[in-house]
Length: 254
Ligand SMILES: Nc1ncnc2c1ncn2[C@@H]1O[C@H](COP(=O)(O)OP(=O)(O)O)[C@@H](O)[C@H]1O
Ligand SMILES: [Mg+2]
Image (cartoon, rainbow, N blue to C red; front, side):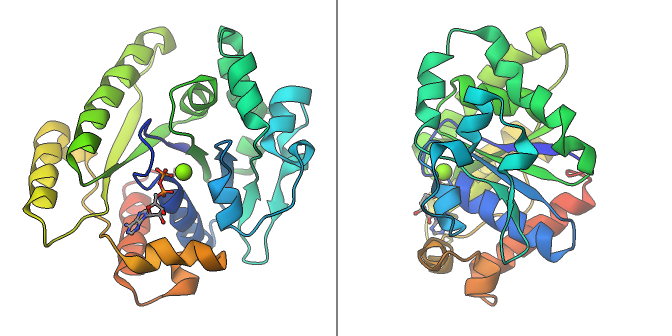
């Protein structure tokens, strides 16, 4: 099964919210996904209720000391399996940014261990195209790009598209991606305009599912819950359930 990087170099577009709820939705389908938090801000880790961990217990230890990935994985009460992040990860970004080989480390680590489990692996990226995100992109079979329904977000996805295309040459393969429109507000004409522009530009690469702006999605992390556990009949739960089905049926995680 596939390794998926949830990436956009813009912050606040819904990467962590999407990783959290996609992982939860896949777990509910019995697919035993693994979520990796690759953001030094550790928002996914916090959202999953994992607190008081040290750098040694986080993915930073994999980059710094070659601690094997399975040794860092934890299984939560909800059944979700995850590898936490820690602030120390920002040092990896600073120290290794000039080393090209360092960008392949996560791919090698996954190929040697967790990839063999045959389950979906979802990587929540940080909002920069530095060595950490490059690790995620190079390790990933596919990329999911959340784009929030605002003007600047539209600009950033076009830039990201160019950056990914530039990587395809050295990688010697196409980078398969899907765009997900998030924070969709049906009261704003701008939301529909952005959807139309994305559809025109990205066609079938744009997910049919749009995720609405919904308070349950913003509030569920305050209780360390995914949206299905927090508010199962909310519009946010409806949209992420629809997204999981759409992507599973499209073979996105195969
Ligand atoms: N569809 C949505 N509706 C309402 N709030 C959302 C939605 N998606 C994300 N948020 C909120 O917006 C903020 C940024 O989202 P987040 O997933 O952390 O973005 P990123 O990881 O790209 O920085 C968070 O507070 C999150 O709870
Ligand atoms: Mg995030």
